[in-house]
Amino acid sequence: MRVPFLEKSRIVAAADQVLAAYAAGTGRQAQPPIPVEDIIERGLGLRLDFVTFAAYPAGADVLGATYVAKKLICINQALLGDRLEGRFCFTCAHEIGHWALHRQLVAPKASHPDDAPRILCRSSQAKTPIEWQADAFASCLLMPEAMVRRAFQRAFGCETLELVNAQSAYAGPLCFDPCAANWPFIADALRQTGGFHNVSKQAMIIRLQGLGLVRNATSRKMAWSNT
Ligand SMILES: [Zn+2]
Image 1 (spheres, protein in one colour):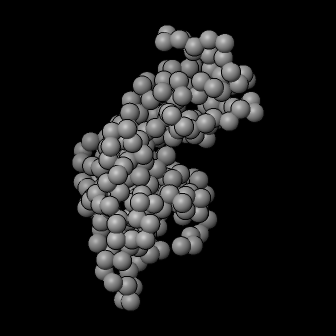
Image 2 (tube, protein in one colour; image 1 turned 30 degrees about the horizontal axis):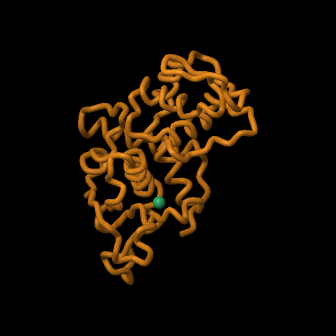
């Protein structure tokens, strides 16, 4: 589906609006770990279900779906495992993003059967604009900027963490060298300090770089495997 370009500031505002509406509706300010399932059900009044998507071609590739007319969000139940909690919560937040940003674009038409998926999210299509926008929204929702900045300040101080070395000569349980190879430790320090327990280290390091709090000045790529 084609979607209009959205400024990042509009995506940030949409995520903030969802959090504000949740606080107003429940009397509870969401704190990390941001309760995405409760936001879907109590905050937005949507149903949340876990399915296999076996009925769709290459269903295993489908991470989630948002059914606008049915006010229903479905998540691939394969993401429910503990090890994939970060991915599960990110997918929930991603579908909230579709609801907040795109539901008007896929208003049900008379020619559509009621159960047709209005937005179907496949991992193989993650780079399309509509999926990028929903990912950006999910990052803002799960890791609100002010909360991330407070946690970063407590963990690392006020300065941007410049990663000038690719590899460290040492690493231990009590301290680590902030080099590019140690990005999982940096991300995890933020998760622990800020309580962002339902986001992956990958999502956190991307958010930190997006906010300009971490800068990788080396040519070493931050590899995502085994983290
Ligand atoms: Zn999507």
